[in-house]
Length: 140
Ligand code: CMP
Image (cartoon, rainbow, N blue to C red):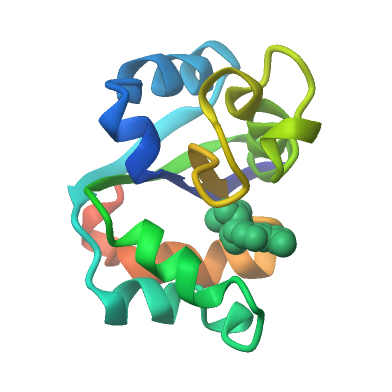
């Protein structure tokens, strides 16, 4: 089925000037960008996004990293978009990411891991509406 998923190009990948390379991978895989914006997240915005991890030992570092520079937030649309995006990203820990995946090619550490992608239809819906109003999504 056609799905939508939320993608974030994280501060490390933006700093590497890899925005275009990463979006090209999405497009080459048949995913369409239907919404996009660059933003520098506040602590509140980043903390709210990762609220499910609030009690985890890595939460503080994660929020610190995600607020360390601008990010590019996008909505990707396509057949099986959620799983397809996760395949393109590779494992959360870049040391475990398969060769040729975004994280294998651009990420250094588990925090500075280049990209985020929704992990289920439920989180996709929540994450998309966390960043985008309906009037900011462009069906195509
Ligand atoms: P992301 O997909 O953005 O979702 C939560 C983030 O927490 C994850 O990518 C990692 O960048 C970061 N993180 C840091 N430590 C861990 C860990 N031990 N397990 C999972 N995620 C972690």
